[in-house]
Amino acid sequence: MQELQSKSPENNHSLQPFNFHIFFEEIKACGFYPQETRLECMIEIKQPFGYAGGVGTAGSIENVLFCVDWNGDGAYNSSESVGEGSVAMHDDSANSKPGWQYAVYRDFDPRGGVRTSLNNPNIATTTTNGPTRNARAILSWFVELTDCNYRPFWGNVVNFRIRFDPIR
Image 1: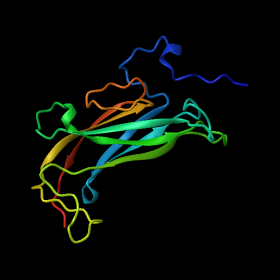
Image 2 (image 1 turned 135 degrees about the vertical axis):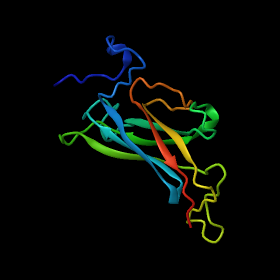
Image 3 (image 1 turned 30 degrees about the vertical axis):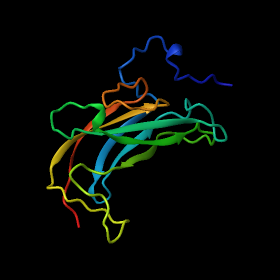
Image 4 (image 1 turned 180 degrees about the horizontal axis):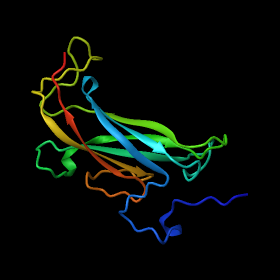
């Protein structure tokens, strides 16, 4: 039986923290869906192993923290987090070849706007004047995130721009 490489930092002494190790997973793209006030990223899973067990086990979690630079100062602080999305991962047991693409998202209430219509709570609205903001997504395998400046050992950080278009 082939010995699988572990994602544990103790087993990879040559790897230095904060280099954004993307051997197993990586955020490839992010965007904003204004009609749902939703930030969403696409994660590419690159290996068939390393996710803490196959189907039928607990597996592991890919966590993505979303942040918006509300004051436009180019820096992020903890109050600019809009929350986290996650997806469960398992080692492959079907002998299929990677990569696989997964979407992770977070709906949130924008500052200066209203997220739901009073007439229909399932329809999003916004009363913003269409400002552009910088946004950040941080992917981290297994570690829940709370800091918009976190540097993951396994995962990466993607900065992107969004615009709060008035809708409906």
